Length: 533
Image 1 (tube, rainbow, N blue to C red):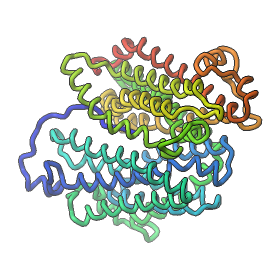
Image 2 (cartoon, one colour):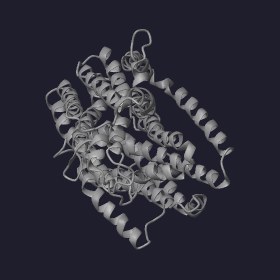
Image 3 (cartoon, helix red, strand yellow):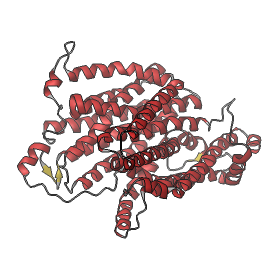
Image 4 (spheres, one colour):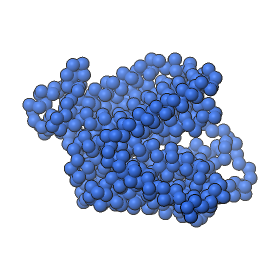
């Protein structure tokens, strides 16, 4: 989940109400009326996204009978591409067809993807994921841009408006696994995926109703009506993008199907980004060069953070299914724990940052990144520690899962909200868009590497546990009270439990170490930021 940053906006007041209505639509409850249409559109879109996400790995392992390695690989390919395509979708909307057309087209593609996924057959599986990837790329970046467009620069309601909007994201993410997960696991996978598709359609209805009620004013229209209407091969730009979107679907389906080869895409993308960043460094001042180094540093730390954090949608879900004594929630429903904590903690954290800033005690951004990583690692150590309380069936108490999620959510609130605002502040003016794109790719990299980490938790025949001996073997034994030989002697369930907790303990320690190192070198990073905190 991505959340509202703590940037404060100035207190300019819009004076000309008639001009305001023409530009950004009518007002309601102290905010542009369009905000509430976008709130419900995004709530239901996130409902569909997180409802499907909660079921995906379980569906692959239980219904399609994919092994863990394949399931985690497909999930990683899907998750990484979902965060890569918004860069393309944002450009298409900005330059060619506008936000509104992009949002409607993306929503339709995602609804189709959910409904196709509800057809329980491998033939439809990869196509459905590709529809979701392409649709998300067109929808996700542009609805947030619509919210930003509702407020003039300097409008003091902007912060509160985005807080309302992001609450919709978290509500959708919280509710979806509870309902879709229940239907999918209790009555059939197609019911869960089908409900996710219905949620997407409901979101589209809210957005379409908003356009018909003219609550968005001029926001989201094509940047150039002439360019939009210009025909190529008998199609205007809107129809051309629609056709190209459907053409892209089989391409992405093949990439997900052949997920092992996605690494080549990662290497190519990394080489291009590195080359462009090096070029930018040769064209800017020494101050800007230092800030660019910090942007790259933040992006690397964020990629590590999401690589560990995104076990939530893959290995942590199967861990909950196989090795946690679930009483109140099913395995898919445990995906609601993180957004539930976000809803509880987001406002107190916002209040805390405000108070610390007023007292001049607010930690610098590099320190917050370090604390966030350390807390994430601590959360995974708690997951690993649960092995010490496992029963005779190798089931661990659910309380450890809840507490671990709570701790890593606090870590998320330290790191995630500040990244976007700081990258924007640190970027040279003429390279802001590119460097924000680089920052967003931290989620792409995170999901890609999350798949590799999740594969390490597999206890299937032929899998090698690289954390079972040596330095990490000692750490695992001290945290979990388990050894590989002892787990294997106790039976398959304990061997499976050991595979999970050995990885969680090892990466928990690694992440804490990186977090502490980040705190240690924070004065150096702060100096390179040249006055930006």
